[in-house]
Image (tube, rainbow, N blue to C red; front, side, top):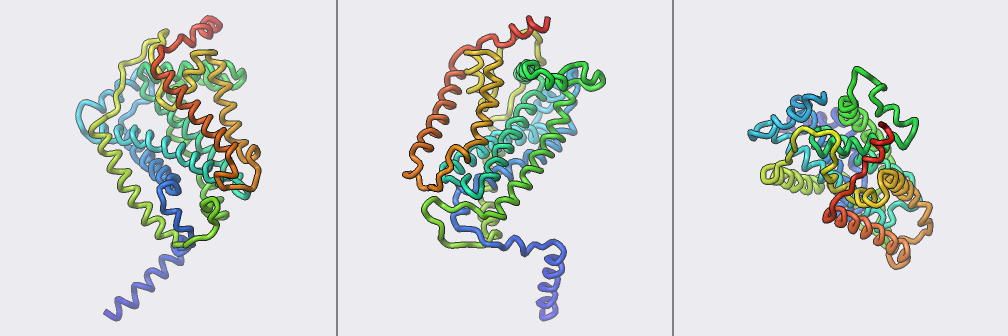
Length: 351
């Protein structure tokens, strides 16, 4: 017994010397354990679930246009590994995007983007943009009517961007169809980008610490390892929630796409843009999207006061509420109204 007691600290010391695990025992405020301040960690776990389930899906998916839809459809008839992985991947994507959006809203509400955390807010905006791109490319990869029409809108935007259109043009690479290039972007380029920005994001959090609750800069502290243990409880609930949705509401897929028609509506993250597009066409889709991300990136410059308490930020919070309610209203409007024909004028130009 005495020998074992001596060996355990020695083994731990040897492991810690090589991996520096004791560095995780730094202090964080106790409010880091609350759900609003755990949304970032939940998003990260959702992303890891997406990566793991996506690796499984790559073993079944065929990224060529003539086979893509059939390869997804063959995953669905029986509840096997492929169907389970696709359901988990789909619902983890929904949870990931929802928690990322809620995380950004929480940061705005608690003024956590203010000095000295402005750079981390910009990193968060980049992460949001990459997350949306991952969601979009994942939608296209199904290669059903919804995915095909999403790609057509993307091609239309690329055409409006002039020189940036070249990557989407068939002449860019005769040997690699655009669907294959989007597949590579989805499984390699965008994940690499998001993990690179995440490294910067986590480094800045470690440097500046977790932001305080407005008006309460002090408070009890705890070890980061204790925070990770608390986060594990949220993760267990998250995993159970995703599995239940996978079993009860498996994702659907439509038949192979038909070119030249426009009959679907986009997934929920793009519904507000769809409503704008109904009014002003594809150019509005492009410029409103760019304006939205530019405005998000400029938030630290637009709200530069040192105040963090809600009562001292009434104008900023009111403006934020107006933006959120407008987006929700546009999404509901797009959901209940019939979509307009958006791509016809561009097809006539290309012809």
